[in-house]
Length: 214
Image (cartoon, rainbow, N blue to C red; front, side):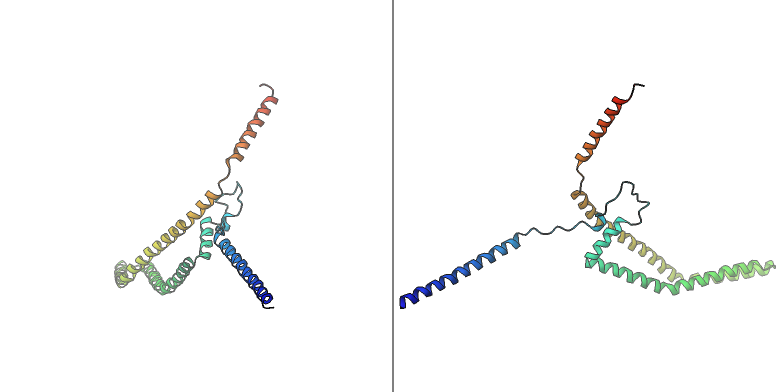
């Protein structure tokens, strides 16, 4: 009785060990498959997936490939999304900040233009010259009081130009690798064109044979 029980117990242990070994092997195989899985290649940007016709010209195209490719990059890149958001916030802030200054300058400019027009309407030459001098002196005072503002506005304009330049450079340098990758991966096979040329030659030969001498 004891011997039978021992044999039965050994059979159960053997089955358990076999199950454990099988499970371990399966886990190792699955892990190996995961490690050896070929990483997915980034898909071709949507802007480059659209088929273009031969008659498609830059002047008739409403979209801009640089902007389209860059927009896709922005959607996928948090850092670019943030800088675009920062630019939008800055543009709004600039408009709000300079609105009062621009109105101030425009009103003063309009006043002096109208002032000089009124001076020209004065008939008496002595009075006209006197008022002309007064208006010019006032204009000079205005330029003096706004000298710092004028200088700062010039700096802002210059830096706005730099922002626009660097934004363009950023878009170009980020999208050039995309178009180059597309070019490398989608270079047309020259055989198609070679076959067309052979067919052209054949057609020309046939037409020459059928054409009477002239």
